[in-house]
Length: 394
Image (tube, rainbow, N blue to C red):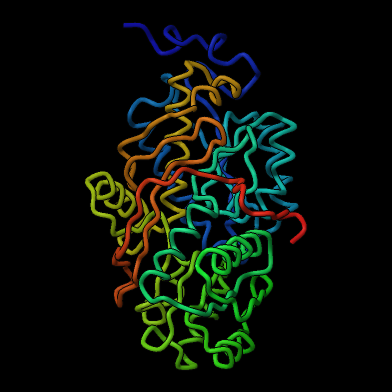
């Protein structure tokens, strides 16, 4: 029986100087392990480590075991760029699984494009980007926002909305898309729109706005550990699911664990994945994740999307028969994966985003989400033609 390096000689599968030997291939993991975003990004690291372990146990990639170099972006965007340079220029990694905020992705993007590296980015985000050096496993804004707003409009026929978010590109662009849809398609009114810095902890002015404006729906895109303060202060102020409909794009099981289920009970999140999805692939994934990271660990939307990254890369490499970036990118076009925790996915042939479904989860007292709505498969559209918007000007 031929060994892996005889069937796939290193000189043939690695023609561009990547860290690939006869037995191993090196990849990078780049997330915030410290700082305000660690609450959200720790799960991504854990999911990527699980996928890599499972891939290695199944024989690796082209017969090579994956070795992961883990770097801490420390919730600081220049640090992300510095660590990305180190992974690509010093470690010569074949791919990087990483980032969470759009600010961190924007910081590393020039590095990946200049070095022709591959970034597998797990987070739902604002869209208006399709770099050939990035695979986008999370939903872009139109996939997550439009279906979610349509659902709440059909459910409650709201006439007024209050928009709140963290002050950076993803919430601002997402709210611009939401406002356009609310005002021009749903025929409703945005009565107020507020932003707060990442890490902000005092939401008294937001609570006053909600009390003053009395919106039918609060639409929240607050990121990171600010969610703990926002939701607990809302609940302490007597604003809860019995008297206020709140839909959020930024709270997953990871955040609920820190926020406290009692503060989230009855509110809604719009995501493509919840840990409670009922299919055999998700059941196996949840069991393996808890076995590796502890019974008390939870899996949110971005954590599951992070798990997709190493698998998309592995199957693209095997389809290409090469680790070379240009060949892997070409092989990923229309790649289908039917056995993922969220179900069937397909890589878009042009923009390297993922076809996926949108689900609405209603948070329960035990911290799980009951899925109350599921869309059809949605094509990614990172550059919506009907929206005259320049995210760089927001």
